[in-house]
View 1 (cartoon, rainbow, N blue to C red):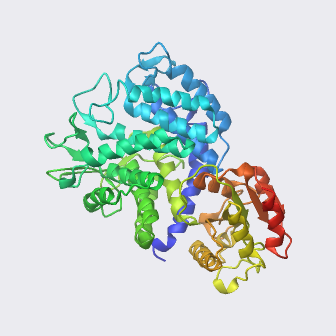
View 2 (cartoon, helix red, strand yellow; view 1 turned 30 degrees about the vertical axis):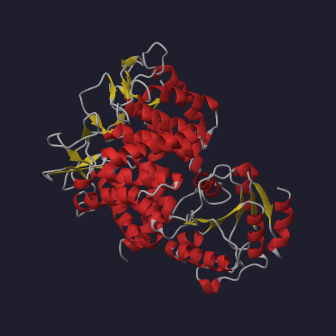
View 3 (cartoon, helix red, strand yellow; view 1 turned 60 degrees about the vertical axis):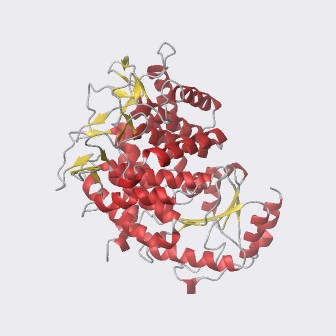
Length: 561
């Protein structure tokens, strides 16, 4: 079996690494109970590296991780988030500071470096966006607006974007803080729907497209002058990982705004894919823009960003999704073999040389953000079947189990010839849509773990079922499945109590996060008590279907909404 055919198992192993190994380790050994903050680094045995100043940026990245994985249903981290956030406010924020927020604190909790740093504040905004998404507290948005006052005031660059810090470290502008400010603006818009955040993202995209991107050289320079010119900066370079990160961000911006970014993406990929990905499918660290000299070391984050770019391109161009799926499979295999294959599991190599030898001296907490985003994007794009839907917050949904609700349960059906649709299934879906609900399928598929069918077969079956329902005018917005089981014969899918497997609510929470669904005003119809319990755990109204016409069963439920 080829590598690409094993992509689904690669994704499953990566998901288990994240949920079983990495998250528990970083919530335990990576967390300082004394201060209620995360350690900056661990050594390769999993012990904290002491005496290292703790940057606000790292705390913000870890808060994002906890919030995203809580929303995903992997683990409820709300208590640890609340404690950490209170300590962040206590240790890093002070009205006595000229710009409110400190860059880092010392081991004893006092301020170590009080500088005002744009990169750090961009991640503070990013964390606030995800905290608000988890718990819509207007206090988070008030703080975000206060941070924007700094970024758009003393930290604003004269020609758009931001300077590095106050005081400025040198005369250059760097693309990195502005890139992450765009990321934060998009996260805030997705979390709140505030028009001003999308407007900020649009302005940053314009600066990137018109000034930052050196089109004749197909490169995004790392260093610029105050006019965002890079032509006269000797020895300038680009980092392929940042090209890939911008590809993902631009596609995200396009999805939210409708702005066409195809030309920008084409320029970024044209050189980064040719020069910036080695034979082992790792993103190399940097390439000289004019002399094309390559720094052959590899950083874990660069390959994470390559994986995200592959997912973004597969989503943006469905006709070419197969090509990008193949590339994503190779990138994920490289990520696992080159960076994640460590004991104890849950740690990583942050930097390796061209031969794969470890160059990093310890394990920086700051990299966890990259792994989580890359794996979540890989799962979101390649681990479900979804129709393109315009961005909107607060949409409601009818969740449907599959076997026994949409089709007759014949015992692990995995091929089109196994499917007989339930009476009234397409009518019920059409009626739900007429009432303004999205329709989402959430189905346990332990037959994958048991070896009765591959995950690729189940995904193909869902495409076939979606097409047949489309012919009836019964569009399903998304199909989610859980392939895990505690008695798996396929090791990649072994999990004692997977957060997605009903009665756990993971699939409903995942759909809510992906599609911005209001769970409290949504419904689920299933044929098993585990379906109803999953609904209850997600805050959804659950209803048990015992057969007959699905339309007759669903109509009174949905008509009351």
